[in-house]
Image (cartoon, rainbow, N blue to C red; front, top):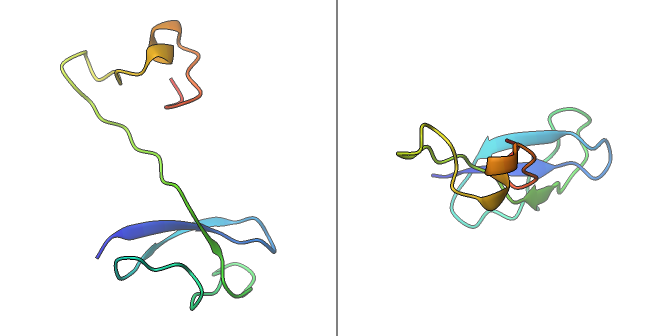
Amino acid sequence: MPIYEFRCAACGRHFEKLCPIGESGEKLSCPNCGARAPHRVMSSFYAAGAGGGKSSCSGCSTHNCATCGH
């Protein structure tokens, strides 16, 4: 089962949940405020490679990357 990220529309809290593949969030509730049906959001990730742990996105060389946060 994958871990999905969700955001509550009522309180804005982001949280992760281990769910069946394709879970939309309709059956979930926010662990912070209890509001129903949080929105699933796109997860970010970091892939370390041969470049000394740096990502290969173009903004990393300037240390001003909106994509990965470097």
